[in-house]
Structure formats: structure tokens, C-alpha cells
Length: 281
Image 1 (tube, helix red, strand yellow):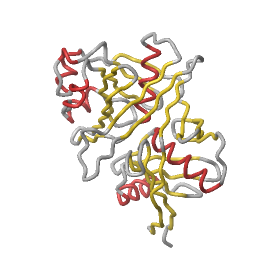
Image 2: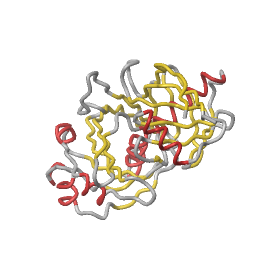
Image 3: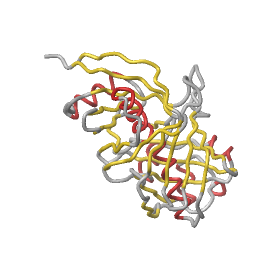
């Protein structure tokens, strides 16, 4: 008997309906086996596919290549789809492999609360790490470190926006330097200029390099990094991502990061539904 799933296509973190990162949300009363979910994600070819158990607000997230332990943009896409399907637009908890996360709409943005971030050293000297990212050692500001606000991301702050845009990571070296247990290697290269930041996020499986359109996970990690570095809340930052991802249509992502007086980190952005349908498997 064929598996028939309804799906919804959304763009997350786009200032316009055609901007941001594409996410497909598949409705499912129970999760198919992992092999089937991975095959469906590959077939749908969205940057991320979310399998959503609407009744219990449970979700699993896949890229076409692997499962993600956590994804901020997938979480917001799932929450927006849930609200449309059920009519419930108040704050809700959603449950993923990483644990539960609170999501809510406010004005024209959707927000999620990040869990408290954990930090650990990168274990790689700055010159070696910079070379692996296609940067000069002098481009790197501060000490790179892993921040986990849902999944481990190696954060590398640079001294200029230009160095962020010119980064050219080596897939094998990035896989080695940014490796973390139970997940694909991930690194975020970013630069802050006042209340605006430029961000690029790379994932590597050693042989291939993938760049993300909009990473709410990296934005949450930056909020944890700011607190870890002694930042005094409240803190707010707008992050732009996608400048170097060349497509026929520019898909710039805009993410909003806020740390309140209680040191709670939240990440938000616009979510747009652009269509949907059914897939038979």
C-alpha cells in the first residue's frame, strides 16, 4: 500500500515571499522508518524536509543527505504549518530529537526560544583553522569555539564582512576541524558591524560542502556566544545570510536575534507558505 503524505512548501527567514530558505513540511500521524524519511527528503530536494506529527507536535528534520538533530528554520516552518492546520496560533511546545522548544508568533515574525548554550574549545589553533576555511589567520577575531544551542556549531568570528564573503572552506578539513559526535560537521563564519551581522554556515561530510540559506541554529549559537563572551543583555542583532549562494533568484535570509534581561535567547523571522500538495511513496 502506497504511503500518501500531504506536504507544505514554506520559505523561512525571507523578508519577501520568494526569499529565505525553502522548507517542506510533511504531515504524518506517525513517523515512517528513517530510511523512508531520508528517501523522501532526497526526492523532495528541499534544503530541509520536516516530518510533523500534528497531533503531538513531534518532528524529525532531514536534508537530502542526512538527518538534522535540530534546525531553527525547520522548527518555525513546522510551527507555522501547525497553526494553519489547527487554527492555534498561541505559544506551543514542539518536540524533536534535541528535546522540546517553545515557538510562538509575534506581529509578523515567528520566534523560538533557544535552550541554554554550552561552549567548548575548538581544539584547533587559529592559523590551522583559518587555512581550512580559506581565510588568513589575521582575518579571525577572538578564539573560535563550539557552541551548542541545539547542535554543535563551530563559531568563527572574523574582522570584516569581506572575509566572511570570501571564505572558501575545504570540505575534508572542515569535516575534521568541526566534527561533533552524532552529527554532520558544521561551522559558522560571521562578522558583526553594530546591530547587523553577516553570516555564512557550512556543513561538510568530508567529500561535499553545503551552504545553508538561513540557519536559526547558528543564530541561536551566536546568542549563546555573546553571553559566553560577557555580553550584557538586552542584546539584539539582525543577521543576513545567503549573499554568496548563487541562484536564478536571490534568496537573502534575514534572521532576528534577541537576548532579554533574563538571558533568554530567542531567534525569529518571517515565514511564508508558497504552496503544497501530496506525495505518494
